[in-house]
Length: 344
Image 1 (cartoon, rainbow, N blue to C red):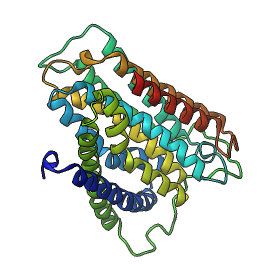
Image 2: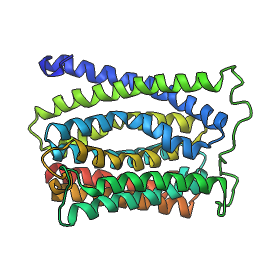
Image 3: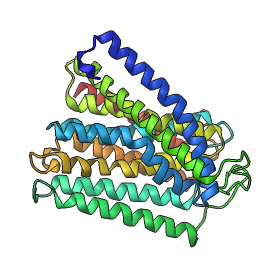
Image 4: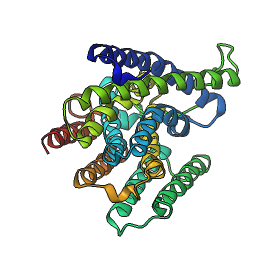
């Protein structure tokens, strides 16, 4: 289906229908992921970061690669970095819905904090490659390969740290530990069937997110806004809807570590959007196409992640309006940055 040939009303219908699809499938995939985290013994933080984070990131990576292949580097970069910022804000929204205590307090774990540190390292790596003298081989920046290697090394290190624990957050009455449920498969579903259902729901979420992104791009492009604004405000938020839905569903199901791991781990994976877009961008290194607006988005995502990491370390039980200081700061800074970008 070529959405560009549809009238505006039909594009809006596609957008809303895809959003509903994401809401339904995203809720179910979070529940299946919680069961798989228990059934495999990998834990909610690792499973949420790698598998659930990858599944819900598919719409965003398709959008960034498509934009880069079409020569729209600004849109591609803004979609990637704007998605990370939006998803961090989504975690703050989930904190509002968890009424028992501050979400970062209840879900504090070594893997989640290591994921946050890894995310900051990768983001600063992108900034390093964007501000250094530009070089490329076959129109690919060597830094893109470094980002892939750093990501896989970091994920492996986090998995090893979970098996050989040398540091842990002190448990409190509000802490929800990541302990496997011995009755994870009590409904009679085998691990193989759970994997099959997870993959199927992941495809549905990816398709729904892709349609949201494409229809949203068409709706926003007709307003004449810059690619940075379109990428950071429209496609980034649209393709991040799976993360919002799955995060809220995981919180409602009591899988708090999975919810936080999905967002932080998904954000870590989303940094690779820039590296994969560099492979698709044929006009040279995509890092050379960074503008001040993209560098602002990069600094914003690193700042939001740092604030979130401080919240995981401080573990405030209750804060303003029952949310922690980090959620309040993340939402305030994110909304202020959107206003600034829209008026830039």
